[in-house]
Amino acid sequence: MTHAIEVSGLRKAFGDKVVLDGIDLDVQAGTVFSLLGPNGAGKTTTVNVLTTLLRADGGTVRVAGHDVAAEPKAVRRAIGVTGQFAAVDELLTGQENLQLMVDLSPVPAKDGKRIVAELLERFDLVESAQQAASTYSGGMRRKLDLAMTLVGSPRIIFLDEPTTGLDPRSRRTMWSIVRDLVADGVTIFLTTQYLDEADKLADRVAVLDQGRIVAQGTPGELKRRLPGTHVRLRFDSAGELDAAARVLPDATRDDESLALRVPSDGGTTSLRALLDRLDEYSLSAEEFSVHTPDLDDVFLALTGHATEVAAK
Amino acid sequence: MNSHSMVMLRRDFKHLTRNPTSVFNAVLMPIVLMLMFVYMLGDAFSVGVDYVDYATPGLMLMAVCYGLGGTATAVNADMTKGVINRFKVMDVSRGAVLTGHVVTSVLTNLIAIAALVGVAFLLGFDASASALDWLGVAGMVVLLATAAGWFTVALGLSAKSPETAGMAAVPLVLLPFFSSAIVPADKMGPGLREFAEYQPFTPIIETLRGLLNGAPSSGDAIAAVAWCVGIGLVGYVWARSTFSKRA
Image (cartoon, rainbow over all chains, first blue to last red; front, side, top):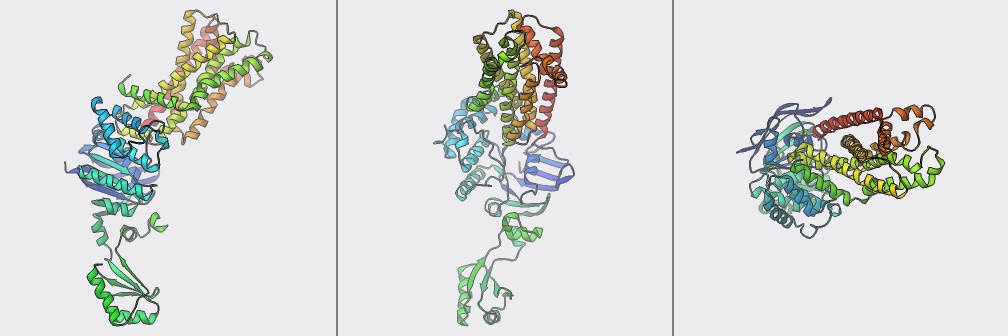
């Protein structure tokens, strides 16, 4: 199996409102694919169709080699899904939640106890295993949710905004869990509205905006569609800006903010050369910063409007 | 019942034991009502027989209704918190999730009614029902609880939030007051009287009352069974279609 997920021409509308307007995706087995977009772009609807929860209005969707409309049972056997809200049973303990998944999955009962114990260990939930999930923190709930998804050892895992609402430390924990899963050969389909998350985790990223894929590629490819890394120098006066612009002919000037953008690879050698050159002409910049384009820049360049996250 | 249904049933019962509010509403509330009506208000009503004898069948029906709020809330919590989606993606047999809730609801009702009838006997309830009549009572109660259970599960699945789901079940709690549960319908004012006579709970209560008195009326019984089957079918179809559509 080389294609874990193949989507072509996927369309879905709720009444008059078109949510997905012809989406094509191709996810290779054993990779992390990230669907990136702001709130309301159609990410969750896409996940719901791909995981057999919703029926598409048009197009074909194959997951693990099976058509989601024709063979939903075969698809369900191959996938695991962690939804946008941690779908844990709050009145049950962590251990009971996992045991429930074992009881409902085809996992043989004799392996169940071992699997539950291993998952509690792996997700650092042993100490709270006997407490009701309602007492768990947001990060613990997400971990329990993901542990529940892993009970049947699915080969394709859908994570719908797995880190939304988590504190930075829990986000990092979640990221390292995702990396471990990929190392085991699992395919991950991840939706996120955090650009750095897609950048850090994904092999390929598709940018979803108002029901359409506006760009698709590796994070690197998407970044290459933008001006490269550069150094930004801001000066005190127009006179200094003029002088610096004469000395650095490659630079583009921004008169309004008295700044120069100097192309650079961001390495120490070229930075030292740049600083030496300023020094040579007794010029000093008020502010110095190195800019590497991130996916925020990509999103802005591709859609012509900022993401909600970036706009805040 | 398949193994998934058993797993769901175990889960729903664990919920019940860990959620004292729903147990209070389902089991203790009807008993509180019974004590209130029989001791405080019973002497003020002239119904021709001992008030506890008159009120017990109606309170049995109310005991079913008081249990439903918890069922609606529990079903809705499963729906809105994504638990049902998790089960759907795991290919849990689609009936199991709903059947689990309905069976839990019915069993809660039966426990509540057993407790209620126990208290009624302590208060001097005098039933002239034969063993066969009691069997009829049990059958009527199970039929009612199952029908109301499916209807409530559908309400719970359709509601936007657990709070609105709880609200949606309120009419089911209020409806018995406008039936022959507490006072005979023919003692009510015009308008209300007709409503009380023709609403579904009245024939059900009258059937229970007849059976407990050892003198069941077949007209009431046919109407009662027809209402239950109708309500149950509507609830079942509505619940199944909402379950498969809503994601």
